[in-house]
Image (cartoon, rainbow, N blue to C red; front, side, top):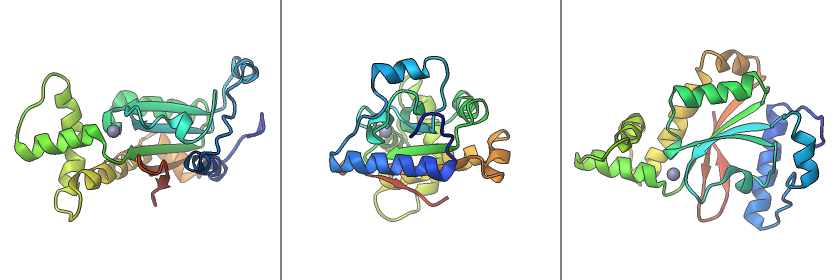
Length: 201
Ligand SMILES: [Zn+2]
């Protein structure tokens, strides 16, 4: 993206789609990963998107979208479980830095979702703060439970959809979404192919 160019949601999405296509094809450009870029953004940032994704080591947003320094706000929790601190971080990106796109990205074979599904299916317990992760995933678990097919994958998709809906209804984000200044999209990352599928909103 040219420096000083302020994208709208559609332009920001196109930049992410094109970066992901390079990642899938193995034709990475590694943009904005130079000392010159570091110096250029030291005094101020204009990221093109906020990505809220899982902590999974195989799903690093800057790499799967082939972006660099100053390009993305990134919030990561286990299975992109949401709470007030996460939502405040996303609000900051959209309101203070005028980031036009918010992407909620879940992924194939998510370990945290697998843990929650097994725990809730079996009525077992998990230690310490993992209880909070499992409980945060309970709504997605319940939404996906009646569906045919792979229960973990269905729960991942439900978690993406529910979290994107929560962000669209956020009191600070909702007017920005209604005014087409900010777009909130769900996305699903395939560990096998590297492809990010953006989900209909
Ligand atoms: Zn995960």
